[in-house]
Length: 429
Image (cartoon, rainbow, N blue to C red; front, side, top):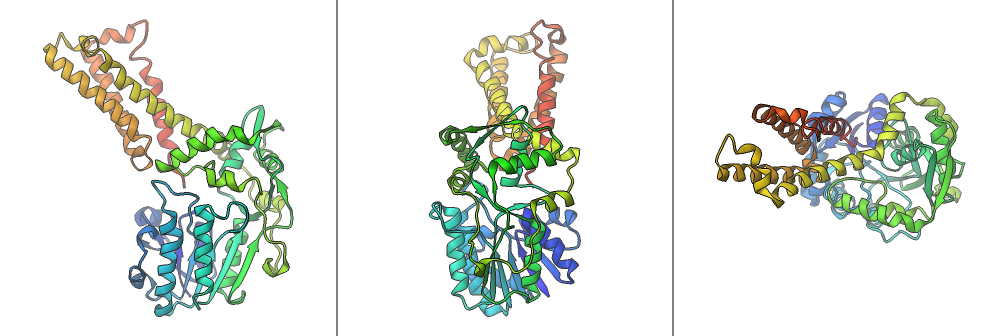
């Protein structure tokens, strides 16, 4: 069968995209950057597309030619610079369904979520729910799968946060530590998609994918810490109110394009936990892997410990670099005459002032651009190049600065290393 996968480069989508070719299907994935996706997944056909722009049925016509099934693994937690929930999770899906009715598409498999509960009015769940309802009313053959918290070899979003919390030193601060959580293996999600595509699930099936065990957040963090091979640590339950400044900061980061799992949508869901519907009608009739089986099948390596320890440090590193560069630009502009004195033996006062102001504005610009996810990589490279230029210029114009007791040039070297490390861990998936 020819299958089009939406979100094929994501945490769930990449596993589904690996499973279906192994079942003998021909898979095509949509990606914003197909050239990069093709390097990582060469056995899959790739098409350049952004779901947020596919909001008219005509936008889907060419994409659906020859495709017998569509598997939607795409999703986003919250609106931001990188995501538009209304466009991606609702408008694009309604356009897809309309186009599929006339294109001969035989099946739509929707990876959704449980969309009721106290947070059901949140855009993430509301747009998912509207798309699910429209699919059920469309007349198309469909299967809706609603995974609980998805655990796998890789990590993204909530599962990445679990690893980061588990790897914290000495004391593990937890909010909503008693919240109940069900989990499911990402491999079992891919298996459910495989069953749907193979016709083993009935038309109109609406299935919750969750194991039989119900965990608390506290227990899941302890399980992940054990999986990482770290000794037990004391867990401290924190009042939910203490999370508000973190959530506020995470929401701002989301507006700048960073997809933090600590945003307000996740915090609104967590008091109730992540639970499936308990009636048999919505439960799978096959066995799902237990947590122990998931972790036993995916033993942790040292790279997992590094990832977990760096995960929460990454935003602090970016913020530190941003503040360092912005302040290094603002401070000289408070007293440009004093700041330009190093240039005076080599140029006029006017030119020295102009150079001081120009470099200060450049520093401020780089500090601001690193805060924006789309421009962060370019800004980090810019920081490296500008820093090396400053070091070269300082060495040529005033080499004695290397021996200055305050170390104005020596202190730049750690910032170069911090920039390089931030660049190395910048990617989110």
